[in-house]
Each structure stands twice: as C-alpha cells, then as structure tokens.
Amino acid sequence: MRSKAHLLIFVGIMAGALAGLILSKYEGSDAQGRVLYILDLFGKTIFIGALKMIVAPLIFFSIIAAITSLADTKELGRIGWKTLVFYLMTTSMAVGLGLLFVHLIKPGHSANRREIRKNWQQQQVRLHEKYGAAEAKIEEARDQSASAIIKRNLENIIINPFLALAQSHSLGIIFFAILLGVALIVIGPEGHKVLPVLHGLNTAILKITGWIMAGSAFFIFCLVASIVGSVGPGIFSMLFWYIVTVLGGIAVHVGVLLSIGFLLGRVNPFFFLKSIKEAWMIAFATRSTAVTLPVSMDSVQNRLKVSEKVTRFVLPLGATINMDGTALYEGVAVIFLIQLFGGMPGAEITLTPVATILIFLTAVLASIGAAAVPDAGLVTMVLVANAVGLSVEYIPLIFAVDAFLDMFRTSTNMMGDCVGAVVINRLEKFT
Ligand code: ASP
Image (cartoon, rainbow, N blue to C red; front, top):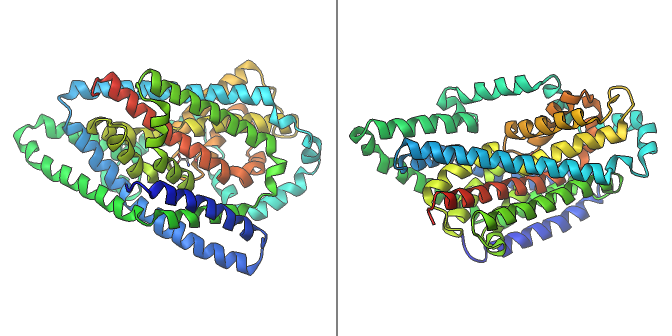
C-alpha cells in the first residue's frame, strides 16, 4: 500500500466523524435519511461489498497456497496446534481482563441505575422502534445454547465448498482448502502441476485488493460519517461507564498483545503498531475482520516480514476464530446488564463464582462462533446471556453504542491475529 495511504485514511476517519456529528443534529429529518442513504451506498454497498467480494476467494487460495508451501503434513500439524493454542490463550486473557474490569468498575451500579430500571418499559418501546432490525437478529439467536452453536459450526465446516464460498462461511472454506492443499501434496507430481496456477490466482486477488483500496480514504469517510450520523453523541452519557469499562479493558489488552508480540515474537511494539496502522484503521471503520484481511495480510507479510506461509495460514484462521475484542466485550456486556437489571423479571441472577466462570467459558466460545462481520458479537452474546439465564429483553439497552464499540473490538480482533502471526513465525524460526 502507498506510504501516504494511512494519512489519507486518518483524514477520512476524522472528517467522517465531524460530518457525522453535524448530520446527527438533523435526527429524524428527511435530509438526514437521504444523506445516510448516499453514505451507505458508497461505504457499505460499494466499498464493503467490493472487499467482501474478494474475501472468500482470498481465504480459499491463501490457505491452499500456505499448505502447499509447507514441507510436509507434520509441519502443518505443528503450526496448526501452535496457532490454535495461542489464539485460545489470548482470547481467554481478554475475557479475564474484561471480567476483572467490570467487577472493579461496576458500570451497572452507575448513578442513573434507579432511573433506568424505573423507566425500562418506556425505554424498551423506544428502543424497539429504533433498533427493530438488531432486535430481530437477537430474537433469532434467543434459544441458542452452547451445544447448538457447536452443532451449527460443525454444519458450517462440513459443507459443500461452493456453498461455503458463495455464503462466505469462513470455517467451511478453510476446512476444504486445508483438505485440498494436503491432497495436492499427497498426490505428488499430478498435484504439483496446479500449484503455480493457484499461487498466480492468489497474487491476482491481492492485486484486486490494491485497486479497491485506492479509494479507501473516501469510502472510510462515508462509513464513519454514517455511523456517527445515525447514532449521535446523546446516548453516550447514559452508558458512559459501560463504554469506559469496555474501552479500558480493550486498551489494557492491546498492551498485553503488544507485550506478547515483543516477548515471544521479538517485535518492537512501536514498529508493530506502525506496520499495521492501515489495517487498524480499515478494521475500525469497516467493523469487519474478514473484510480487513487483504490489508492485514499485506501489512504482516510485507512490513512485519512474517513468512508467506505463516501469513497465509495464520491470519485467515485468526480472522475466523480469534476475536479477543469480541470475547472481552461479551463478558463485560452480560455482567453489566446483570449489575444493572439484577432482580428484575428475567434477570434474577446472583453473580456467584460459578456464574462468572460460566460467563467466562461461554464468552470464549461465543467469540469463536462469531462471524467476522459487523455486529456479530452482539448476536453471539445471546449465548452468554442464555448460559446464566439473563433474558434477551434487556440486551436492546446497549444497541445504541454497539456500532461504536464494534469499531474498537474489531480492530483489537485484527491486532490479535497479527500478533499471532508474528509469534508463530518466530516459534517456527522463520525469522
Ligand atoms: N465485527 C467484529 C469482527 O468482525 C465481530 C463483532 O461483532 O464483535 O471482528
């Protein structure tokens, strides 16, 4: 990516935030509706649409390219296990940090607690009118249990690969690409014939990414203006301590990730941040780790100098299953709602150590099950709520700030994947 690109993107984010603030002053007007429509047309339909267009083939060809460049299947097993263990550990740390913060700060015991509880019926009606679409997604997930999520994930893994590609089921794409990659190595000379074609296709897809990114600053302006313009700053005061808790936890976790990258991956934290800054901003604005994948792969391979095979294997896998920011957020959100509504119908829960452990485990699982797309964490959070018996009726309270928090959790998710790549690269002694 060009050297000045990050500056342009930064200007796009700032200008977008400013334009959004101005737009939010016209809440509910026709003019606001029309401007939001145009912003979404450029930001979501064209930009995110174009990135989505290439993500499924990119994951597919990247994984095959990575597998077929490994020495043997033993190397695949080794890298695979290290990656899974690393991701599981960092996700668990993230949830642990979130739970610590929410217990220390107690955002649910804020000064306006009584008022929120008293007016909850009216609030619910208002939230229903405003966030009906988000509520519908939550409703769909209402009866999900941990075993249902495992079953659904298995169904998405063992699936017709064309369907997986068409519907962007990353787990299914990764699984079939690994199988095909291994088979190509195992069959020998016949398999070797197609390798240059696959590697060529992979490079061509990265080229298309470059073309799409050429206009990224403008598109990001549209995305940020649309989010800020439709939310507005008003709601932030009501949920202030909740936001502080999530962002505080995320900030500390970013420090943990940078330390891990330094200690285990031997990468200077400043150099690391400098290398991934474009990817960070794209993740922040698009709220999708999957859509950011082409950019994060470019940064990790070309700037952090992680080997091609580790980049191509570890990052797509990370974007699919490793979500530190999401896991942290899910634990915090559920405990916040219990602190706030505890004792009301559907929230008769005492935060015992057992309940906290349940929240810890399900938050890890729910983050693994979350798709790398905007708002996914909000939906899989239902699983965490279900595990401790919190009614989903209380979740709409946090809808209004979810897009804002999604920006931070998505960029943290992406950062966790990149640290994973750096560490695995080092452990495999590729640098
Ligand atoms: N948007 C996040 C991601 O793509 C997932 C989430 O909603 O937490 O990583």
